[in-house]
Amino acid sequence: SLSAFTMDGQSLYGTIPSTFLFVLIVALITKRKYGHLLDYLAPLWLVATKNTDILPSLLSFVGKVEGEYTLPIFLQLLIIEFAVDGLKLASLNTPSALSNSLSVVGGLLLGDYAIKSGWFIPQTILYSAFTAMANFVPSNLELGYCFKFQRMTLIVAAELFGLWGIASVSLIF
Image 1 (cartoon, rainbow, N blue to C red):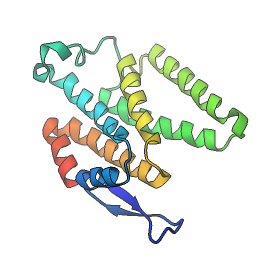
Image 2: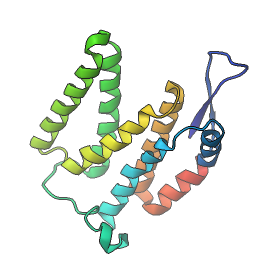
Image 3: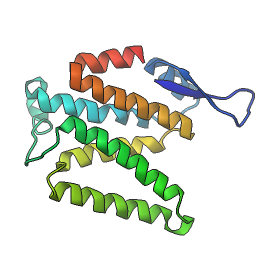
Image 4: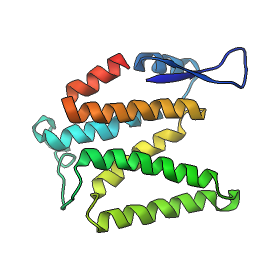
């Protein structure tokens, strides 16, 4: 993934390649919360839907996908990632009195429509909502996008290689 850095208290930020371990060390040093660990929720759920046998019996409900859908779960997760960015940009460009409520109402309406039309399943919306909350954990916008790129890479790796893909992306990026 990429990590944001600043030099000498400047307000200019840059991004550098980093490993997940580097990000955890920075989080420990700066006493940040571990909310970015929610980034692993959607990729792990994607693997669980494909390999329900790896789940213990207590968590067997996680891998069950109910309902009909037209798009593969992999594409659902990627589309929702872009939709969350679109809602975030829309809320940034609206007046401050309306911005928060507009993005919440817009997200609810779009999610409800997507489920009723059969494009998405409710579980995809649920797990993506949890991972979308991880966007607000980092202290600056650049670091949030670094985690978003890592999350999207994790989703692609989970689709292609399963748990091995998640492990390799976590170690490499």
